[in-house]
Length: 231
Image (cartoon, rainbow, N blue to C red; front, side):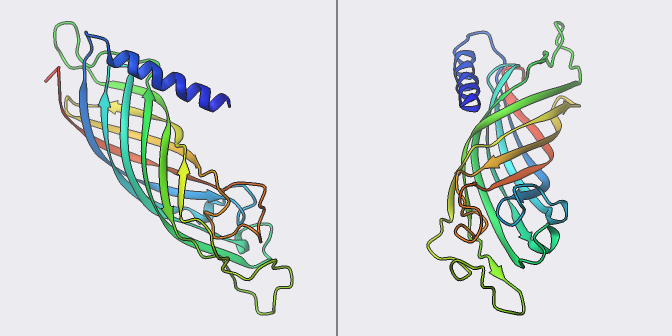
């Protein structure tokens, strides 16, 4: 409940900031190269570093003012899990799937400064920020048992049927932007994605039905400032 309250306040503040008359609005477009990971039924609700996979994506960021911005993104990558890398090595379940994510987030830069001095001279900026929003992801995981003898602990056969492959999610995280030149912005960002479902890893009944799955996305960003009032 606290998360949704903070998210609502962030979005409301962004709308208020957007309505102000004297703001510097700029538009960025960029790319991300990073990594993904997962926690769920095949990871005992914690990240296994050996399951880290590559990820990448594209985004556009619109600065409402120096403190608030809105970013739309499309990210893609893979997630996987294998019991051999967990405390459940004897169970012998595994899964893997590609993911395709789209999202819209609000960003808050609490220590924002003006990019240009009072005389119009550019100055480099290093700014941490927080983000939160909504999105969706597509995945089609098929969990499997790879043991050499029949598994009598399976509640239903693997792969399980009638699982979701589209998921609502809430991207939440933090990052830092380094505006090194008048046009280019280098960044580092990381966040987690609760998907509000236990189906992401292709396992519901044979796992822990009382706990939803998560995945994580983070990496380096490079953006180009396309234009705005300062340009």
